[in-house]
Picture 1 (cartoon, chains in turn yellow, cyan):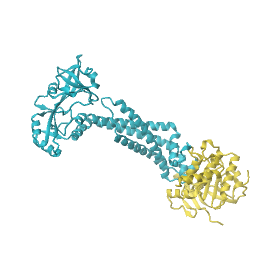
Picture 2 (tube, chains in turn brown, blue):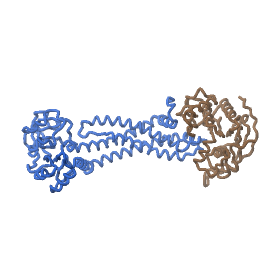
Picture 3 (spheres, rainbow over the protein chains, first blue to last red):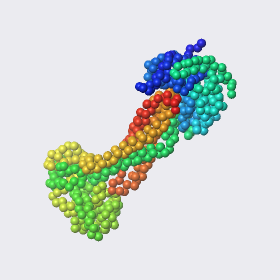
Length: 236
Length: 383
């Protein structure tokens, strides 16, 4: 079995302080391997988003260890965490978070620009990433002129363009209708087939189960179960 | 909007964020333009005033000025003893010491109305301080009886219409023999150029007194040495170079009277107003784009990258705002060109104002930058 690209061991995270302090994660352990699409499922308030933030190097855990490509986040300051995130993690958000003033290609290119990629190479790569999600013809289109499904595809192109090891997606189909949701999942499942890339999707939508290689259940800040999925990438 | 394909993306993002909300951008521009035009006018007045108060010194033909001790400015009414002239002439290196008489007098128009004038009388044969920009008549005509030179811009004030017009100064008849252009006084009191003897009669300065001695040195003279000698030979006088006298006059009018402080206070007010407006609009623009900046952070952007976007917005606002302000400034300069106190905008002032605009706009972005510094990238998941 390959080495995990991302690994969390006994991760704990408290949110808030004083009387409002809540233990959002209580000793979570999981690992993500290349070539696998994992679903993280659980009810609202179960700690899914907090776990995603910790795994994505946005939040520092109070206890336990997170390792990305073998590098631990322990003791890293905010900018070092940012560097780690920049190098290894791509994000897909529920509400896309595209920049309304930038075209589709520019939105994708932004992910390379923040990494300091040369403009010419960045332009080529962003066009390729858009082509990969089926939007080669929409490079100059602005988000307001795109459908919800197309916007999410741009967001996926943005997440993959810098070839991160891990893609973390937060409810990527929640704002989409069934057809668009399936199309997005097909793209993510396709990306997850690459052996050097792991995809973790937070969802509570059971329609995504057919795309999963693995399903992890979380409840009240703890992993309550894990099962192998039954992938049908040709569905839809 | 896609035509800017070759622009750095930071610049593109800043540019489009700025123009995305046109109303806010216009408010920012109004703030910058108002502020810079205000500072420009105040500083232009300062420079114009500084230039106006030294007009006579600038046009006098002198290597050194001898004046009574404590003279504060050209218009100072203190008087020298004419014996000082002979002392000056007996100093090595001094070629000429031309007396100059100045003073206020009453001008009575043909209609009987009175108005104050500032009389300037010098020895017309020696040519110490003659009228310049003569557009009608000749300077030489001033040596004729009753002859005076006045500026065209004061015709209405003086009740004259050109060469040959008559009036009275101190109950003595005068006749306009020469007309000048653009010799205006910042005090709005018209200048009247006359021969020195009649200047004494019009101002009441006795024949053994003079306001200044304009010293011309021999070609081989060493100004510093002659100046020292003049100062030691003549008691109770000061010997200044034209540059020193200019500086002293300027300092008196600008700082001794409080006029300069008022102009600087106005300029400072402009800077404060501009900074507050730009800071407010940049802050609210940043606040509106906070989600985007959080997304950038989540994508792994460094804080520096985001600061660049904000500073770029500030710089763009500065360049556009300054350009509009400079155009307005040009219009204001043209409008005040022929007034008693023209606004003077020099290339150095323009450069300084541009730098001020940049500093003001970039400084205004600090609040926005502080706000961005506190962004938690994890909010990208929750919004």
